[in-house]
Image (tube, rainbow, N blue to C red; front, side, top):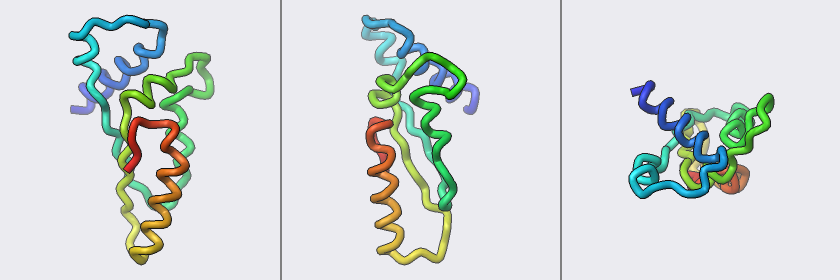
Amino acid sequence: SLEAGLNRVLDLRALGRGKPHLTAELEEAHAPVDVVVCYCNEPLNWLKGFHQLPWRAEVHGAASVQNVALRIYHKCGGLTKAARANQSLRLVRAWKSFFRKVE
């Protein structure tokens, strides 16, 4: 559900707030999260919010890199296989340092 997903995102944010030692039970509760983005050439700069929101001082980059996978679904038609492959490669290169995995 959306509520469960939002709660998981808030839990991930809490990981970056100076909690160096998590119990095994808590670590298990913080299973990786997949973020799926439907993409059609629009800017994805808002994804930087997973590291740091512009109006907040907290940085959550380590939690994102450890726990969040980005999955990009190409919703635009009309691209050749080669063009789509080039676009995918560009997106992976642009976002691989921000997330655990980018596909």
